[in-house]
Amino acid sequence: MKKKVCFLCAVLCAMMYAAPVKADVIWTPEDSFYQRHESECNYEERQYTANGPNGEVEVYESPESPKVVATLENGAKTSVSVTYTDKEGVVWGSYLQGGWMPMEYMDVIYDSISFRQDHAAEITEEPGALDEDYLRETIYVWKYPASEECYGMEPGEFELVPEYDSVYVDPDGLRWGNMPYFYGYRDVWICISEPTADVRELYPDGVPKQEPEAQGQKQGDKIVPKGNHGREAFAIAAVALVVLVTAGLLVVLRRSSKRRP
Image (cartoon, rainbow, N blue to C red; front, side, top):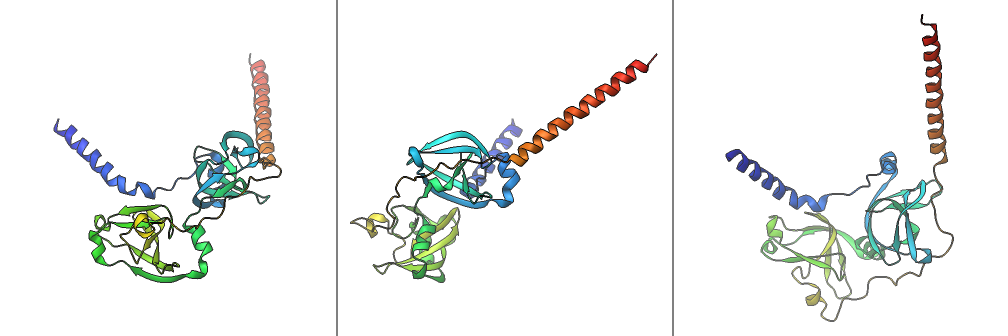
């Protein structure tokens, strides 16, 4: 009985230890295509909205297989973990439920990367950190400055105040710091001027418009994987070789059996 109790305690401790790092897990495809082309893929981890011709985006088995494994209706949101660019220059994104889709038909959801691209000239490198007094406060991290999404957190849980590496000053004079990483939070922002203020406190009349207007439905010929004919030919040749070798061995065995007295 004592051994069982000790075992259960050990399991619970392991689960408690693993929980805080769950947000740091990077998902990657588990299909054979990714395993063969991992070195050619780029880490993405961004959110997208489906926007394909005919009101849908078809998800294929791989960038080399035209087999359809899923269909996303326009407007559906999904995360893309990695991308792959084929020899034709077509960029393919991994689908969480399995498969690959043309990134031409996926519109990125405005995020910190989008914000930094739009405001590159206004963002300056300025490393810094919040005052230690904020260890005892609830501060807010933002998807990007003046985004509608912000999340409360308590730095005291980690006994470390958030640090930032660059600063953006908005039209209202508020200073924002970009945090590349902080205990599971990646590429987020804090309002240096008002770290403890949420959306309603900073923007009682609503956040200023940041995101671009939605794009129209994509037109043109549907993008479909061309297939890896070289790989298919190799597979067919390998099978043919196995058949020939097997047939040859059978002939040899038959001749040997006939020679026996």
